[in-house]
Image (cartoon, rainbow, N blue to C red; front, side, top):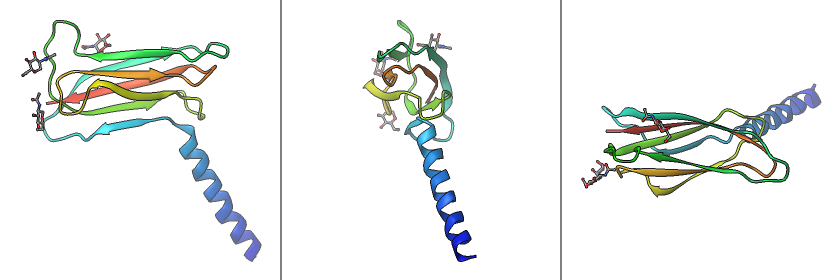
Length: 119
Ligand SMILES: *[C@@H]1O[C@H](CO)[C@@H](O)[C@H](O)[C@H]1NC(C)=O
Ligand SMILES: *[C@@H]1O[C@H](CO)[C@@H](O)[C@H](O)[C@H]1NC(C)=O
Ligand SMILES: *[C@@H]1O[C@H](CO)[C@@H](O)[C@H](O)[C@H]1NC(C)=O
């Protein structure tokens, strides 16, 4: 009985660790009232044997004006702990432009949904 309870607790803990390890979501900034989705883009890259692949997402498009960025949400749609990494390499929160650097794990692909919110 006691053993069963301990086992259940361990199983639940183990499961939540697994769940955390499964997605490589990244959340920068926080949404505020009256902001809006200013760009949403999906970046899919297939895996390449022993390679790390990178992609950059830029906002706004060349020659366009950017809104003041409040939040950047990067959702990992690959899952299973195989997703890549995201970082902001230029501009970002509180700026009117940004560059988001996306990188795969070695040998893996990426499937990121990037949402940029601005005001
Ligand atoms: C959003 O950004 C992507 C990548 O820079 C671009 O290809 C796409 O045209 C943009 N969409 C809009 C609505 O600006
Ligand atoms: C960003 O804001 C500055 C100052 O308001 C402006 O000069 C610049 O053109 C803006 N850049 C973009 C990409 O919107
Ligand atoms: C963007 O908004 C933040 C917070 O309101 C403000 O501090 C910053 O000056 C704004 N930047 C631009 C380029 O408008």
